[in-house]
Image 1 (tube, helix red, strand yellow):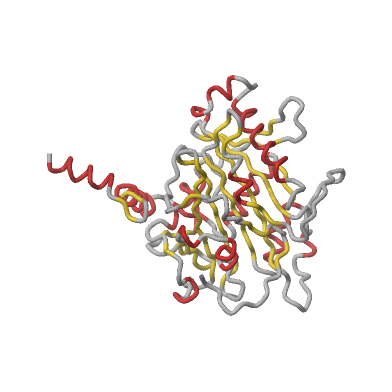
Image 2 (image 1 turned 60 degrees about the horizontal axis):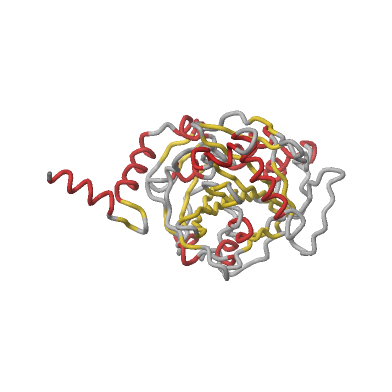
Length: 355
């Protein structure tokens, strides 16, 4: 009887919106899981799908009955020939509210949409990070000139769908894949040509996102720690953002533009629905040569004991339940949250790198 009461209390008592049992389970998994196996699980080969009368071929990844697709958003730098759009904004930005509006589309209910943005610092590594899309050829990797090369940023939307919650929508379409592809195409149409360029990724391109999101992290050479991941090339450290602090300005500060020891930064904004209203949460991951000084990340909350789970949560991997749960808040109509998505970023010098 006493044990049952304790277990019940642990399952309902929360800290920053996270139940004690959920936190403990994640810590145990983080410490016991093999990084190579944990980060590779779910990275299954995607399959290309094109709907009847659809314009694009969309890669769909399936794992444990769950599905994901990926949309790339940018300023149109890599547009394919023949793809024309009219965009009035000078700099490409992604309106988060417009993305959240697509969590429910008529009879389709998405489990969530993750906005994952990766920035690699200037120089040869930035060239290599973008070379998979044939933007820079290998012969250009070492040609960065006398001046520091601009940082390279890429941003994706990861759409997640649980078929069991969309039985009626699936029944009225050709297949499970066709249902998610329909939602993907609708989101692309809503975004493309407004304030940014958007296009769905094929199966081959989706596979490339896995390595891009991992940045320089090699899972088989990584060792989980309480406060960071240690790997052969340095340290990987993740933090969650206090929900009330999530704003366009805060997310921009997270890039730490004046911190040379940070080689890559990965920001994830997760959008979900609760009680009919969009919710958002955010976390950031830094890849550095050495441990980050505390003053650089003041105002952020370290994902203690959940470093491996934080890396996995940013990957375009299907799953019934994310092992990472971070506090979030409602996305309000007046938030006007926007993320710059131009692929070349030249940060101005700022006096404060942290929040």
